[in-house]
Image (cartoon, rainbow, N blue to C red; front, top):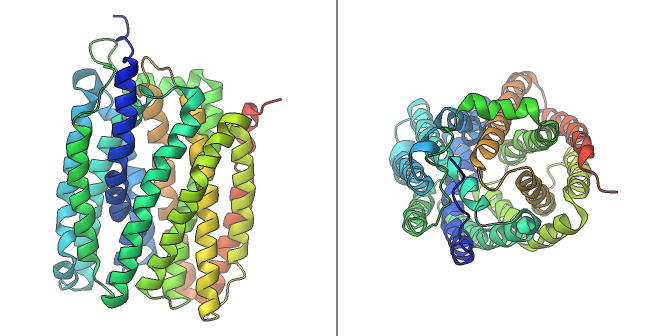
Length: 415
């Protein structure tokens, strides 16, 4: 059967508008239940480094469910699958709105309940993510992808700044008051469902059945796709393995409060806000490889700087804020270049196979990375006279590894 006809210009424009609008509440929900806030919540419940690492990789690691779920795109509208995935995430996240009651269960039970809720939420988000980028591929041409994703991510970064500024003020008065913050994010997730019901789509139903083994076969046939995935996975895995333990070090080795730690998170979204659109234009003009190389070397230098951080009062907070700001700028560039290059490698008429197989392989690897990092750190910290020295060594190794992550991507250099 021939591919479905492309969307009309009017439908593509409406899709872009709704994608940007719905992504604002979506990313607040996403980050509140997969990012820095759950890390701080688990630290306050007394979770170990190994469990914190596992939680940090949940959403990426559970992306493996997308591969067997790929055939669902042959049977159901992508929009319906997106709504079902978001609804499952809402169900999993709901108990965390009552975080005070979970905290009252005691150390072991509270950590187990919180982790289970976060796992179910991550599973729902991964099922929704199965179709999110295939939907977007119908709205965006590769040559304009950098600017589109720069604008898209700039919009939700502005919302994240507002959310985390509010979170910082709230936690300054209520040290373990995570329930209200989870509640606000949960309501925004409901708003996302209302918005995505109007998304247009280019159907992939009724033609060739989408199967996991066919998607994996793409990696054997397409050398450029393999090289893209090697470089992308390398860089992303290092970021996912490193960043959660910066927060853990601030809380446990440098004595930061939850409010201080959340304030550094605001710097993350300020960094993304001011840099995403310029990165998008740069990726469109100079190519993705130039951005990959720049961000990899920059992240290496940034991680190395953590090996010299010391508990020095107010100055340490300023240094931490500067680190998270700079990290966000570099991660934003990597993310925009990554998506632009991926869209170049993806056919417009049937994007799901390429996008899903890359998401699954990248997600599984990047999800394991923080779990492995936590498993390494746990015994080292248990035996160390100085926990701070262990973190310093960890960040020095991470600096070396991330700084050479662009090497597999040299195939994409422009003359």
